Image (cartoon, rainbow, N blue to C red; front, side, top):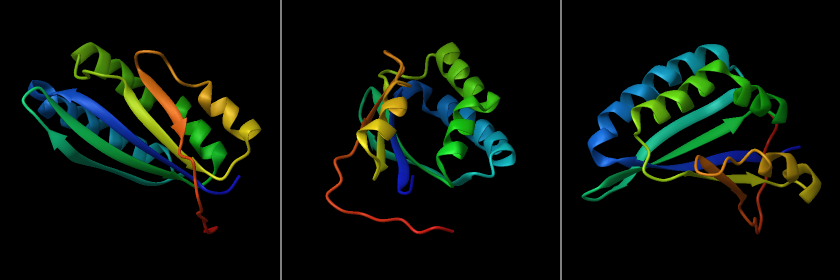
Length: 133
């Protein structure tokens, strides 16, 4: 499998934004230490209103196996638990996958979605490419 990038949007209660950012910073450090297959992880604030802040993150993985390892990383599991425990999210995470995969290759990723926590969809690519490192 070649082209693979994840983009996510997290909707955070505005009064919990600092907590969310601190949690993410701690977990990012752990994931950086334990996941050499994550080539890029970047997060930004994209919008804010009276009740919520929306963050956008990008993740690029070396390959599909590194993505699967990411999902099993205890730091990622810890992130999910802290988010629930601290009640920082005000909507499910919207995850968009960019991949030039067949429907058969996409199926396992779509099965990962957890109702109420996150949804995954594939961007309908018009064109694109990736390079091997």
